[in-house]
Length: 117
Length: 109
Image 1 (cartoon, each protein chain N blue to C red):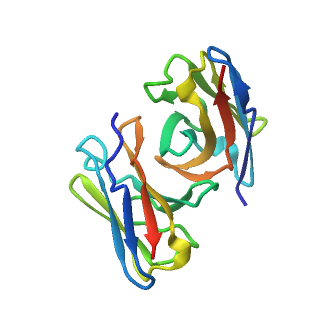
Image 2 (cartoon, one colour; image 1 turned 90 degrees about the vertical axis):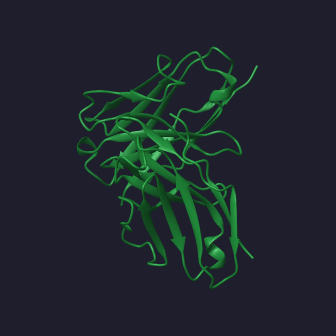
């Protein structure tokens, strides 16, 4: 069955960086677009980034454009999110999700990013 | 891109039906038939309930149904069960942009 396991979260100071990873199994990773979605504490879901199956392009929500970079390594079935210039409002759980067409289908359990001074 | 508009909360008794609305614009909900609904229990990852406005993935009970009219999509849950108490989020594709609703807390009384 589809499994997505995120890692790389932690506590970081404002302005700092983190690299999140998402290891995928149970499906042909190289055939599917992938998403990052985040959820601030006690708040709703927010789409962050999308990358097509072949990594040919990247799409971002406005608030992270220029600071976050989504990428993938299809040889290692792994999705990444490089997050730079972190702000307090970037705090939250970051989920990776397997796409099915234009929506997230299966979700990982998430990794917590906390921006704190 | 603004979030889609959902009621903050709805409630119902076991066995009853509830409907959660999701209002967007002609650039998202009204412009594409790519509306999805997700259920999220506290501390858990979201789970896909409905895709393509009306399609249920395998394993999702037929008590959950989706529809759309113009710029507003709806999720109806019939025969409410206590385990349906959760947060529900709508979601729409918006032309290489993706937007969620603010979420609706369903309380089963």
